[in-house]
Amino acid sequence: MAVVASAPGKVLMTGGYLVLERPNAGIVLSTNARFYAIVKPLCEEIKPDSWAWVWTDVKLTSPQLSRQSNYKLSLKNLTLQTVSSSDSGNPFVEHAVQYAVAAAHAKFDKNKKDELHKLLLQGLDITIIGCNDFYSYRNQIEARGLPLAPESLAALPPFASITFNAENSSGECKPEVAKTGLGSSAAMTSAVVAALLHYFGAVNLSHLSTDSSDLDVVHMIAQSAHCIAQGKVGSGFDVSSAVYGSQRYVRFSPDVLSSAQVAVKGMPLDDVIVDILNGKWDHERTKFSLPPLMSLLLGEPGTGGSSTPSMVGAVKKWQKSDPQNARETWTKLSESNSTLERQFNLLSKLAEENWDVYKHAIDRCSPLKADKWIELGTEPREEAVVKALLGARDAMLGIRNLMRLMGQAAGVPIEPESQTQLLDATMAMEGVLLAGVPGAGGFDAIFAITLGDSNQNLVNAWSSHNVLALLVREDPRGVSLEAGDPRTAEITSNVSSVRIE
Image (cartoon, rainbow, N blue to C red):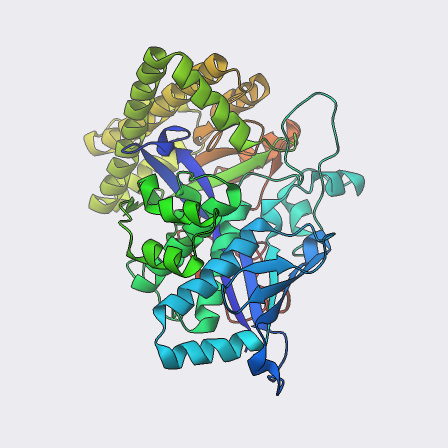
C-alpha cells in the first residue's frame, strides 16, 4: 500500500527578487535532484475499538537527519500535535499533512469520507528523503581526501547523512543545514502533499500532463502548506516548479491565501481548504526549457549557503527607504530579464527552423571563448544564431551588474566579490554562454549554461578554483509517482543525469 511521490529542486535563472511582485516574470528550471515522500499505513489492520477514537498516529522519519517525530492527528479538526515536547518537528511536513488530509476530506462525498476515515485509523507512516544534490557534502569529500569533482559526489552513498553548518562568530546568516540552494523545502512539501493526496485517492498521479486538474490540486495545497509553514506568502515559484516542472512564472495574488493566514489564528481548517480550492489562483506559467545543445551546470563554492528570507527582507527595506532608485533598478532588471528570455526563445526557434545550421553554429562556438564567436558568423543563418548567443550573454551581464548594484544599495551580498570573480572566470571559459547566482543570490551554488560538449572543461576549471561541480542537470519534469522506494529501486540523482530534451 506504500505510495512514493517525488518533486524536483529548482534553479531560478532570472527574476530574483522581481518575481515577488506581479507582473514580473521569472525563468525557473526544474532539475534531476528530487525529493521523495513515502507514505504507508502504520498498522496493516484497524483495531476493533478504533472507530471510537478521536486521534490517530502519524510518524515522520527523516533518515538523512537521523530524526523521527511522532504526532497525534485529530480526526475531528484534522490538526496535528507532537507527542513529545522534545520533538523538533518539521513545520513544512506538518502543514503538508494537515492540508492534504483536509483537502481530501473536502473533496469527498459521504462514502469516500468513510474510506478516508478507515485509512487514517491505520495511522500514517511518512518517510522523507532528498537526493544528495540538495545538500553540501564538501566536508565529507575533503575529509576522505577525494578530489573536488562530480565523480567524488557520485561515489557517495545515495541519500547520505546531512552535514550541519558549524556555528560561526562572523554573524553570517546561514541555515542549520549546509545546502546548495535548490529549494529543498518546496520540493519536500510538494512531494509529501502529492504522495498523501494520491494515497487518499483525492488525486491520481498515474497519468499526468502539465494541464492536469489533479496537478492543480497538488499545487494549491502544496503552495498553501509551504506559505503557512514559512510564515509568509512568498512568490511561490519554487513550489510551482516542483509541481509542474520548468517554466516561465508570474506569481499569484497573495490574497488567495488570506483565509489560510486567518486559519493560523483559529479559523476551521475545513473552511480554509474550501476557500483555497475555490480561490482565484491567477499565477501564470508558460512552458520553458533551455534551447537544444545547452546544459545547466551548478558549482558549489563551499561557503555553506545563504539565508534567503533575511536577504529578501533587506531588499524590501531598501525599496521602502529609496523608492525611486529601487523602481529604476527593477525596471532595468525586468527589461534585461525579458531580453534574455527573448534570446533563448529565438535560439529555440532557430533550432527548430534549421537544425543543421543551428547545430553547426553551436558545435563551432563550443570549443571557443565568446569573444571569438562573432568571427564564425560568415553565413547569414549561422550569424543569426551567433548574434542570439551573444545577445543572451550580454543580457546576463546586464542582469548581474544590476543585481550587484541592488545588493550594494540594500547592504546584502547578492553577488559577493568572491562570486563575482568566480563568475567572471567562468564566463571567460571556452563554450560557456553565461553564468550567474540563481534566485536571491548570495553564497549558494552558482549556475552556468554551456554549449555542446564543453561541460568537462568547465568542471575541471571549477575544480582548480576549489569549486565542486554538482551532478545536477535540467530536467523539465515536475511531480511524479514513483514505482517504489528510491533507496531500493536505485532511483538516484547519480544515475539520472541525462537531460531530457
